[in-house]
Length: 143
Image (cartoon, rainbow, N blue to C red):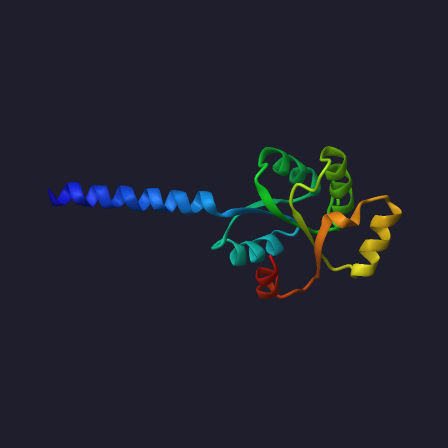
């Protein structure tokens, strides 16, 4: 009898754990720096289901295959497809902003907005801007 109850309790715990995992919002970190992704993931992993992409091209594929991504952290300077090209591809693919997008870059905010505007990007799709290095505690409060 005790074994049967233990199995039932274990099954209930697994079910609750699965339900909690399903309830977590999905976050996508797009950054070519593996250490930056790892550090952000350490902070976000307890509250979010974290996905990673090492460049904008992989990021586009990830957003396409995970329609439930609600937050994107986007580095600007990456090989293959940078943050600007990612935003351009995303804006061509989707009529409306598919997720809240936060820029994470070493470049000053004004430089980003100037470059994005000159490239014809809709900067209203950018929910926030964090200049590296930034405090993850602040980010967690804002998202």
